Image (cartoon, rainbow, N blue to C red):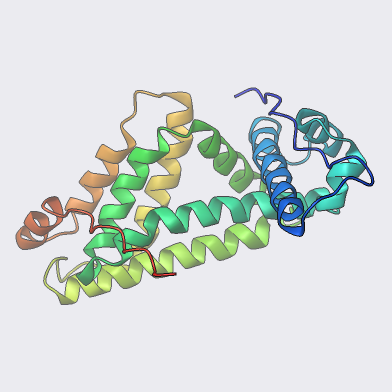
Length: 234
């Protein structure tokens, strides 16, 4: 994926022009979002080391100093990019977490693999940065170490609950299975970038079914996402 210049980030009004606090905050947030999304493209295509603040700022239509007003250095910008992805992932996974007995998390892994094929830029970003983070000095190393631990712990908990409910085979070790599922999803993403014919969701679905009992398989395949929660009353 070649980085493309995004729409210029909104400029501040001329000096002395009237501006409400609310409009100023909204414009600042819009500019931050534009910078983060553009930086994600550059980090995905070039890697963290090769991408420069100057290039990212130019693609956003602002100066280097303007970008550094929002993010003091490239490490802070990288952290914002990773947090932005985490926020999207949490929102996407929230409905699955409400499904009882742990099967919702497993269903979510299959559906996430399907969704990821629609966002190749994010896959490229994750694959490149997670590989770079194997360097002990890489600024994203703590993030990826914590992320893998969190995902594996959450998956192991879901498998344990599903096993207690009779959906997962008694012989399955939840911790070992969680590590294998995480490794499978990451490995599929790397291969998919080279061969878009790979059906990632099908492979994850097969791996999940191998862990389930006959009852668990029937329940899993019949799962439907719960409706989103009703909006809170003002």
